[in-house]
Length: 397
Image (tube, rainbow, N blue to C red; front, side, top):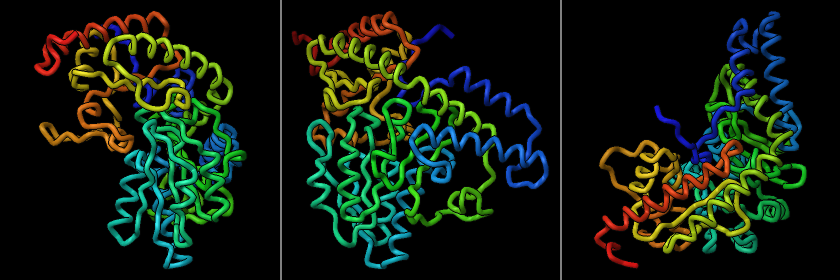
């Protein structure tokens, strides 16, 4: 295959070579169950606990507050369902949730599931940049609220929420606060000693670690009900034999991020700003999301007169991999199925035409300025060609 430039890091990041080495080395070791009492089992348990310490350090947590999961979606589901069920077990009247309208589908669908079983959900609106107002969160909370959920940074438009203020609002009203930090960890400073979240979800493949392995932070004293049952691993909250090699690789990724995140973010921000300047110099191309309070690697662009899917394919043919909206939101859509506008862009007040014109370009630590310049040339050409083909845009200046 021809050399391609990867600009879809919000969907998944490449596996860092140092993390790959950790994964392969543990795959090559004698395999043992960490719950076994023999020496090989004890060695496997030590690998898991060393990784737990590394993941905890990355987020300011204590190791006992970290649970390993199968990824960000599972972490979100365990937090939302577990907090809600624990609240009802303590007080049957606590069947109210407050959830932002721009959550990832992992949180949104978990809340919708609870809504279908008798919970009431207040969907918290956002402004045109995708920001939640802490005053509106405060007004939405009730004595019967089981939990509130607002993500740290949006997976589509890149807007970073005022998480510390939102979490403090919930703490003052004694409401558990869940935060999806899947896009934030490894790219932004995330410290649970400073931000009083109750639970926090993240996953390895968003910061150069393995797919299929994630973590959930559960603050000491927070009650969480299990949503699956089995052998009682991970404090009984996530039963199932641990993926020792995957967890070891997640620990390696956490150690890298702890030491190198600031440099990664600096490079990402420079490349993102270069990309945004070049793209928005094209007439009819605008940046979605907050102009300043955003992820360092995210450029979410509305391209007037162009359908996003066609633009993604044109760029791909030129050797540049970019995303259409949220990769997770579009995954699994049947061929020929109904296409729906992004609920994130709809919540931000954008109409369907603009929503269907949006592409997401997300840079990574190993991209170069030359790659960004090459992409901008290909992007500009693709936009011009597609506009010429558009019956609604052809001939316009």
